[in-house]
Amino acid sequence: MPYKDIPCPLQSGENAELLLDYASRKLTAVQRMAIDQHIAGCPACQRFRDGQELLWKSLDTWESSNFKPGFDMRLEERIAADSRLPTWERAVLWAQNTPLKPAIPVAAAILLVALGLGLRWLWQ
Amino acid sequence: MERDIFVMQQLREGQTELFGELLERHRLPVYHFLFRMVQNQPVAEELAQEVFLRVYRSRAKYEPSAKFTTWLFRIAMNLALNWVRDNRHEMGQGSLDEEQADGKVRQISDRRPDIEQQLVHQVKLGEVRDAISRLPEKQRAAVLMHKYQEMEYTQIATVLGCSESAVKSLLFRAYETLRSRLAHHAV
Ligand SMILES: [Zn+2]
Image (cartoon, rainbow over all chains, first blue to last red):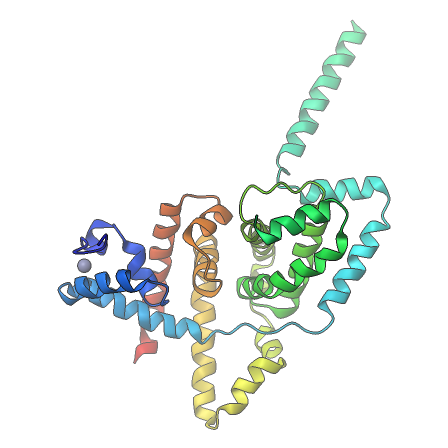
């Protein structure tokens, strides 16, 4: 069994996430048993587990709220408006949305330098 | 193949009617995450609109490099962090009223017979929101994804752009801070 007699998660750092997830009920039966066995002889991990369980209950008090109606309709309108934009504006929007955004100013700078060098060459 | 990735590929091919399926599956998780990040209902809704608009705009260039939800939450997190950085003073303002105007939360409150109990609940809720909002931004995002979205460590790591072990230590520090800030809730 891979989790039998695990080293102290708090001291070794190994399987420390099992202590974090204990309160979330995400552990498998085997993982849970391993932590239970360890905790029975380790007051530090027991304190951590108890604290984490109390924290989980506190965090559970924060429920999110629901949408106001009309979310999909508003999105549809924005998408429709988007597709009516001229191609160049859509290209700008795409550039704004792309995760490679930092590359755009760099590319622009390279282009400017190249242009500058080209002009200098023409001048001479 | 992951269904979401299949749908994105179909969108790329021009089958835009499938966009509704993505929206149906992900709009609430994305909205809940954004709501807890910015603590303001209208702003969270506006940012959720922006997330899905960006997904739609990116459909032609989309390349699946990770799970779709990881990519989606990365967009959501970046938008939320930008908003928080630009509007620190507005964080959480007006959101309590908005929440009470909302059906789901009002139902819960209505079921509480005791006004005092209701007040205690509101105070605790306020403290939870405050404790989370005072976390450094990466820790806050990690807690929201781990606790409320129940995302895996690998996914959180990809969204935050760090290693899995970095996420675990981030979460350890964040929960340690929250435990000490909310320790009095146990009493
Ligand atoms: Zn231990």
